[in-house]
Length: 200
Picture (cartoon, rainbow, N blue to C red):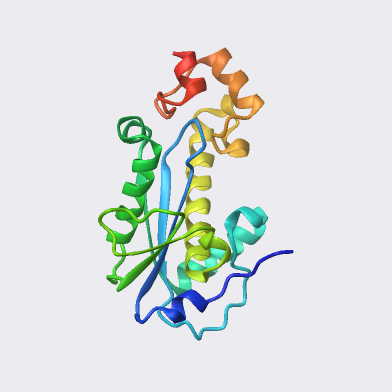
């Protein structure tokens, strides 16, 4: 059964501007971790597109939802580079990317709803486990984060076509691992991640 997120959590929160926050790209061997923050300024708006956990959507559904979200919400993204991921570790880099996304909003949120079980130390908000399946704001953020990161990896794939990043988004697929073994690593690889560390 597909769970459809709604504004129930947002409406329970006594605040006007509520930012949903999520990230994409913890697991890949390369590329940045990307976070997004999304505020629906009008929660009574009719939403004509599918907005749910981005992992449950097809690429075409995500692209359509992305286009609608960027036109109808207040949103921003934040990133941490592979070098920052290696320095901070992926958990703290994800927290940092979330903070950067919220800082980039042109409307300061009253409260943040964070997907997961931890609130970044510099954000005021609430962590919601599987929040992208419950909160429309978080689901929208998950779509913006994933679509943004996928587009970054598609662009990088034009420079490094041998790794298949346009298809695997940097995840450790058999194709990607074989390419690392054959061609070595790039400046976009995360050097502290197991298969990359092994290649070094």
